[in-house]
Image 1: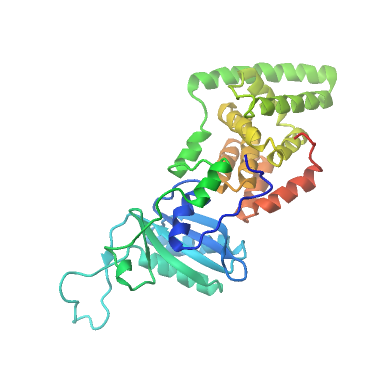
Image 2: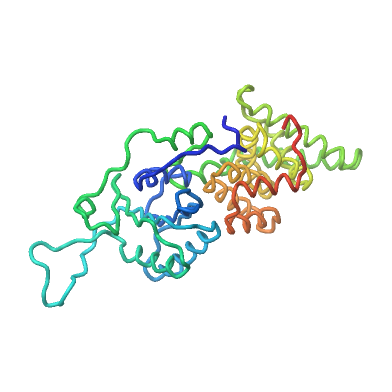
Length: 364
């Protein structure tokens, strides 16, 4: 497993390589999407933030484009790359010249969504961000909106690079799973079925009563230390050497109740930075799936932090949506939502975790 504090460096030079990399940059394969990629550095050659929205209807186009550009600006781009992903049919070209002088022969066609691309060009120009490329992607080919050559004609296009890219290989090493669509990310942490949910609800009630009695007898500090030991044991059991395995319902309940304590949850944050980051993410995923609301809010937020730290913004946002849907008033999730909306970088997130929790334990 790659060191989460030493991100892999991958070089992408051609527009087609960047387009082929979008699923790895987003965490899923975009469909009917408007994507802006921040290009950073003095010469605009370093990929930064990748922002995506569904293709907007014409009446909401300006508002959606404006919001997308605002998100991009938080990354301080030197330039930008625009990609429209759509299987829409080509559109009739707007005739140039007098309206009574129609083009001869067959009706001429233009690339789909040119008006939308133009809206993005105007929005970027208004904030002083140059647009490096404006591309359309469909049918495993790409076109440039600014190209007049024959290869850019609507019926032509350039095939996307074939084979396994350097970024795809790096993503595998880093443990990233590219889903076929964004909805698959939500299904990855979807609540369990009715019977399993009923069993978990009973376990949570029983464990909650038992914890209340032990708290009265021993004090909350003792229970917090026991909870931290339970978290460490679960993470160790989820590691590659241990082989994983399904947690018993009562253990899930014990962990979920323990993470309601802010101090214990904050200690659990440090796991996103250590060698056990991947195993911790497995635990947070399982707790998110199986814990009833609102007990799933804390592990879902920890999952969002873990995903964001390793650069998986798509999963981070899906997990955070789950946390806030479960408990809209959960303060930690609300703060993280504001941070991600402001495009806080993974590097900055790591710094804040270290600042808030102190030095990592040598083991964790």
